[in-house]
Image 1: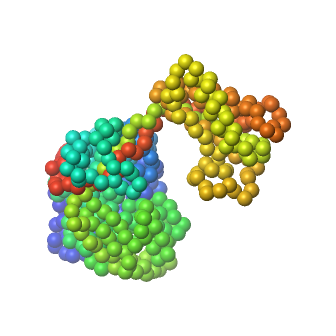
Image 2: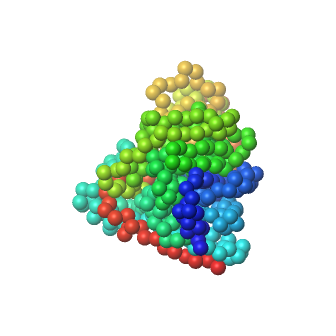
Image 3: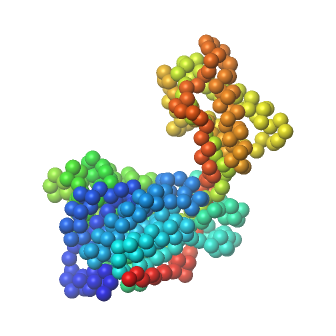
Length: 465
């Protein structure tokens, strides 16, 4: 009997609370062993881990590379996989490999196969890839079934063709279909983090509102605690609400800290939007059970009127090269905008004498405007600041040529009030130019109406041992 079959059979014989263990906030960056082992000692019914997010930026989606190191991902996967098999409970992994496209999923599956072979594990695994065919998206575009999200422009067929990898963010139903294939382990490509912890409650008939609310919190592990962290957390769900407890004694899930988590990744703290619908949090209550545990009740679920799929795609921008330097001259800092503009012109005249301007060169002055575009200048300029120069070019060689030329002329650029011609910049190391490699941008961040998720994202089953 598989782990999911055993769990369903147990609940069929006796209705009881469901104990879900959120192993870590993001798999691949370490799972603190003391808290994880403490969680395993609390007889959990399942283990869930999220591997990805768009928070890491477009490079991983575009390049197909893992965000964590392969070694870190294998260490964490080994820990949760062995624990789940030892307790004979389901293990659910979402957004495999971080960005969740087929290259990321395949790398994650390869690691799981290695662990299974090395540790002699026996299990059935359900897999759902999240990749979307460009042809399917183009057909939906022509039918007027794709719309932009946030501030994105309308999607075009050229955008679709430009993507290196194109995925749809799978929801609860994909996790459920994988579990219904009678498995012990589930691994999905790009997916909503709530599906990891809300799919089994859906199969067991728990109220969807409170289940999704718990899932949204537990997937981040102990981030909802005070102080926040990534240690393992236990969520205990019943038909009226759920309880939260960090498995790290130093972290407390308090009403204030748990309620504050409603602001995490949400435009509106009173709702959670998912592919299946909307969770209304307006009447939710948070009650302390003791100094470290909180009980949450009151979330309501409103089903969506139609099926939609969030599309994510990344396109190649060019090859990136960086200049890293510091400045401590108050005259330079005061005149940085005109200095950067002048050096940009000097560089263009030098490197474009016999070739077109086929690159983009820009600067940020951290300490003044590096993080965001402020409405006005600070009341007092910093006494020192960090300069980041960036070049995007069609080839690595062109990017390196531009950024090295930029370094030389920014270092010796003359400006009004300069006291020394020895150099304007302080370098933290040499060479101060860093070749970063291929750069990508999100060019697809849109919603597509769909009729049947199962036909787009079928379940694959693999047996080990």
